[in-house]
Amino acid sequence: MKRRWLTAPYIVWMLLFTLIPLCIVIYYAFTDYTTGSFTFANITGILDYAAIFLRSIWLSVAATLICLIIGYPVAYAIAQCKPRTQRFLQLLIMLPMCMSFLLRTLAWVALLEDTGIINNLVTSLGLSPLPLIRNSGAVILGMVYNYLPYMILPLYSAISKIDPRLTEAAEDLGCNKSACFRKVILPLSMPGITAGITMVLYRPFPPFIFPRNSVRRALSWSAIS
Amino acid sequence: MASELIRLQDLVMEFGKDRVLNSINLSIEDKKFLTLLGPSGCGKTTTLRIIAGFQKPTSGEVYFDGQPITNLPPYKRQINTVFQNYALFPHLDVYDNIAFGLRISKLPEKEIDRRVGEMLSSVSLRGFENRKVSSLSGGQQQRVAIARALINRPKVLLLDEPLGALDLRLRKDMQNELKQIQQEVGITFVYVTHDQEEALSMSDTVVVMDSGKILQIGTPEDIYNEPANAFVADFIGESNILDGIMLEDYKVRFFDRDFECVDTGFEPNEPVDVVIRPEDIDIVPADPSKLCGTVTNVTFKGVHYDTIVDFKGFKWLIQTTEFHPEGSYIGIEIDPNEIHVMKRSEYSGMFGDYSSYSEEYYDITNMEEEAEEGAAE
Image (cartoon, rainbow over all chains, first blue to last red; front, side, top):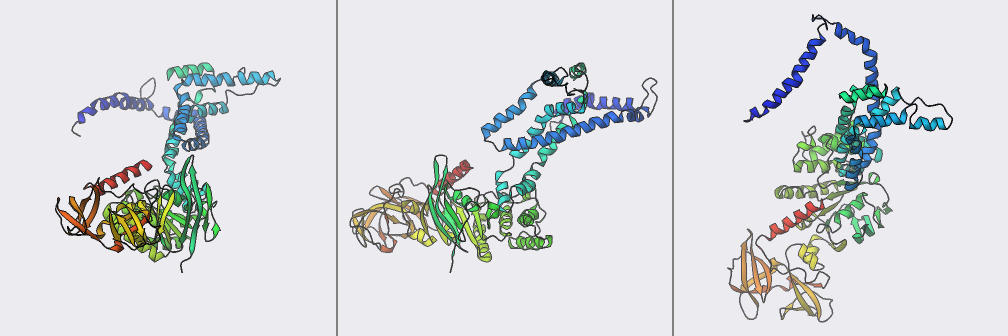
């Protein structure tokens, strides 16, 4: 309490880089780009992009759900292992995160391209190439692949904190395995589920464009971020 | 008359190469309070977990009401458990914790409400229905744990060191309360503890265990007055344990003196362990006809004095209400009834000398136990 002045740098930082830019955004939202006069045109203009907005929200939600469905069993399985194995598996989950987002995405492009590894295999069998890239499926695949660790880790940390005696207590009080999961494990892993969903759901909003468009677009986007 | 409810037959439990239980045979009578007593790691908790169904024995069979239940999962057994550290559900309030078992068995909500209400009154927790369990004190959590288990009307309640985390005063209160609850509901309690006093004051039957074996089964009086071997004598209360020779029936020799006793059934001149409880020894004026020694240490303990007396290099603990100053030369008298003769066992010679007596012996043993408990968790 006494050393309140120590927070000064943080307050200045927040003012400069968060509050002021936000004000600028709000200012431009309600003024005309060329004349500078007050207008609602920018707000009503959102409707023109509604379709794109909705699609990116839909893609995000779909990717998040898939992450949850894949991530929960994985996190649960890791939490049941011996401590040493747990640490090793955790490392495996985090390892791809050490690699550049761009490289990981390019690797998928190399796999999925019309002349990519998978389609080369398909065409060598005398079939026509599959439409693997530049569609919603590819976007969701890319997002699930990239953001799965962000789902697994909070889930794992919530599940591993559940006292194993609580499941024993539930069994003791008459729960079979599935009731035990519904009544005890699932409610107690809720914080992990919420954290996982938050981390995965908001994350994909910016890069909704990635493998859908050309590699160059992905390249330029990654360069900016 | 009491009938057998649970029978453990030749239970063996191995974890890897560790043999935790070594052929446990035990019959548990209906509506009785039975305590498994022993030091940390003696296998008492494992035995309890096998009865509850959380662990399957490596070999052996568990019978419940005559039916084998060894492979029955916990949720199909008419047995409920009060866990060490309670294991209450943190996401539920007091009411929902207690109602948990009844909700699982899909009782009508009205019936649940009535029974939870009854249970809350009987553990004096009325008014706490909507409290978070994390906001309760240790004693209150304990009561919720007991209520949560008892509400299912099990035939057997298993309790795994339920009072271990409470302070001394609360522990005494809860001991009385538990005993009272057991008599009121009239079901079998199987209680696990390493606290001998707890075991003696609550139980109908005490089972003393060490290194995966049962050493003695008996009433608290039997266990205290007629310990089966040096380990039991030392573990239950304080004891002076001496090497002796059973000359003939009713006559035992130690410290080169012959003493009258009440034990029979030994070989002539058989080497034995002799147990004398510190409170059973009377201090009398020194006299050549008596066993005499020098007081080396006196500690005031409230009700009595702990007097350490050196007899030819072997130190005894004597508890008397009279004060005998350090350095005084005294004699002792022992009533023949108070001399307990035991067969020699693998524990002979390991216990019973008070040479390393320290004024804080209670504290030291308590600290050791706590350290072990910590390590076990």
